[in-house]
Image 1 (tube, one colour):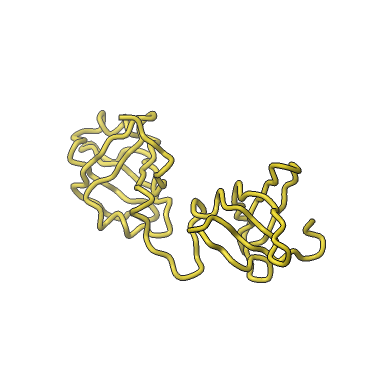
Image 2 (tube, rainbow, N blue to C red):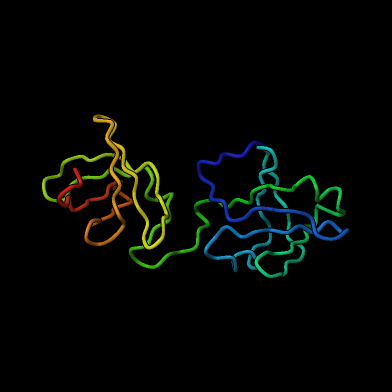
Length: 174
């Protein structure tokens, strides 16, 4: 079946095969790599087609995981999954501490000035230059782009349920 990526989160990438019995090396792309040990199956996107694979055995080797799936019995079969992405449903995410958010929870939120309620735009992306994340906010009406640091001095309130972020408009922002 074709994967609907709208409600999926990437948690890993199959990089290559390992050995002759069909094991695969997985690079975790999650802040919670321990999640793999608790999983019994994963959803793998192989060329746009989703395949559920059952985890038979898993072990850590340096920065990667070596995984044996029940459905893959040899290196030739394993080779077909090289460079495939591993997904979970958004509903299966690990809980974060208070006032911490996944990027997908922020993208699409409307951004308003805290002092006067002026619409500033919509979060289109999040940059990770180091230190702290930066919201990339595009105003569809004015075609302006704002870069807003994700720090308390700027970002005052995030409400993912109602779909907005309120920010302090400091001199030079607009």
